[in-house]
Length: 119
Image (cartoon, rainbow, N blue to C red; front, side, top):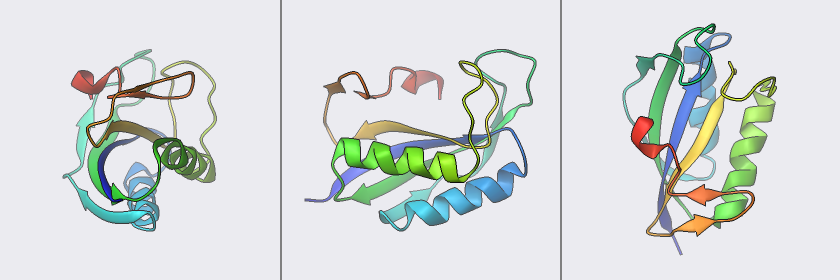
């Protein structure tokens, strides 16, 4: 069954425009994708880091929630993401914001995303 999901994309290290473009191409391997315009925002955590380049993607996919999360985390790793500090700078951040009408809360995933209104 195809589910409509929303993914938050962000980058503030490296060539953020290129990194987000590559991430969008990878999302297209998971299903049908529509993407917002890119926008810039200040960091949510420590302010001693560059502003973020962001977008939101609508992804229609057949992946289950944790399967999708695994793919998103793999894409982050492939982009060179290293988690040095909470809310710290990153080459790529992919957040599963919404997964259909599902409400999910477990040790790996909370949907809708707890920070959805700030993203």
